[in-house]
Image (cartoon, rainbow, N blue to C red):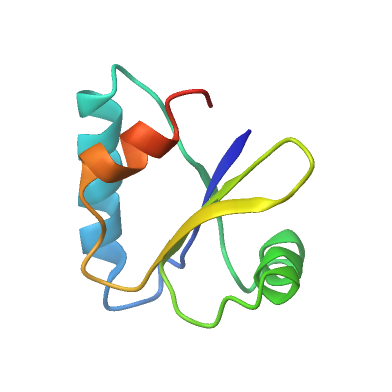
Length: 89
């Protein structure tokens, strides 16, 4: 499984995302989320493939690349929601 966060540092929501990432790592015992800028080649490709137009977006993909769950926009989802879905990541 793959847990990906599409977001950009140059946005008004960046401080909220940084705080959420810090809290997520703390609350899950150090589990990290792969971060991609939607303007990067890989980030743009992922956003296009799954028709993601609203950021930040947290995507949970299975090993075959199927989208299992997605959270889009702000406010950020509750850490417990993401941790529950991502327990096998």
